[in-house]
Length: 213
Figure (tube, rainbow, N blue to C red):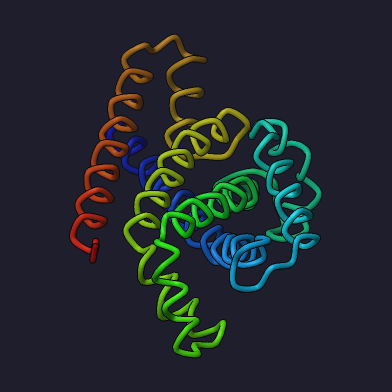
């Protein structure tokens, strides 16, 4: 059982880590565009902003279990399978992209407008404002937000295990629930709680260390 637990733990960490990185690669640029195209921001484009905001809202409103099943053809197209850890990474990533975008939006909107206006006053370009002002100022908020996304992904990965996604959720279902082993289910819950607590503590510590305000 300990070997199975270690294997499931590795699968969960792999799924969550890969999904977090991939969702950040897509979600951070999406969130940046969402913010800078606001009517009173550095590159106002109300139509683009409205379209992106609507898409993100739709994505966030879909329950993960429905998304998991709905995009099975897309998952198979991307990774060749819809089961196992590889098959779970695709829906986990898709579900997290919109969350990351909203996290980025929240972090960027907390930046003092005076800092942005000062950069514009000295002739900074849009790219310079993004790379030298917006992103550096938003780092602590981004870290806290991405920590929250990672915690959600851990819960989603356990849900994916219920439909053959592997990881701790799969272990709990197959060896705990289906075999009436309450101790196995309790053990997986304890491990998941420990992961969440450790991740949350590390994220809070890192955000505090990088806070320049």
